[in-house]
Image (cartoon, helix red, strand yellow):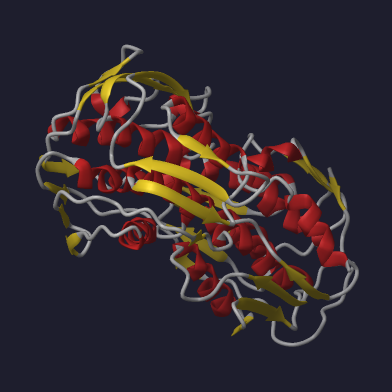
Length: 440
């Protein structure tokens, strides 16, 4: 897909889909609650579809009369099927949350994914669940447990509970999966972090959704969590916010093109940690305002390219930033950085190397492809300003965020083509249609 530059400053209003992270958390928790929950603005994408299909394979009633809302009939912690084979594709949240949930059942369950998901680690979660009394066996011979990946067999007879220590360095989804399942363990669950935790806001989000469904978590910062036996309460109506990660691309567009973009159905008080990307944009010189459950990002500047004058105003500034808490927006920043007036350094995203692709390497490869000078580090990269973006076909590595973020460069520089644009269906199937609305 060729992305054509926008020849004028922006003045647009957009609405992005519901949050993937909130949708999948709400789906799992609603299935564990007792009674029917109606979920509004649930994300319709490959990732959320994998979660819905898996719950249906487990015997839960999940569906919608039309496209929306989504109705989930929870069974109070009971898993109807005693045998099921679940295929999660490359949906990390579904893989991790379902594996933890399945330990509450009684029977044998298999969890598998696509080729990339079979490379993404899950050993820390399996180890912690084993400490709590679960019986989980790898279907591929792998050792040590730190290298464990799908497929897995969960031989379930309820989760005993007790104390478990877990590393937080690879993925916060492991801790979130434990937290979600813990209220239905037979005895209280204590979770102790034995390392620093990546993506802390996602754990805050998990605890917030648990609270929405009536379950409390006692915690000591991000080092210790205690969950007493409790039951989730079904919610008659549960609203999903617009996805902050998806919104980041539209928040970023004015930094590249100039003008303003308003994103609806989201606020600075969002449960989603990626809303902090707005702070990144402010540090770079953008204006951010909140109005009527919408956020407006503006930039009177747009740094000059060799064939295009500046719009005036202050230049876009490069920054040095640790993004370990919001790694999913690192690619968005990487797309903006070449247009800044000084280098941008992104740190703390070693965990991005085990996402849908090695995102650190992918960002460096594709920035170099368009003529940007980049330095690669173990946990990040340094991006230098570029006054002449080269035409190129961007390789996406079947990673939705590579496609969405790097398409932004094409809003400013001619000749940017996105390979395999359909990979955005993972979380934002109509992304390119919404991106086109910026032209009006």
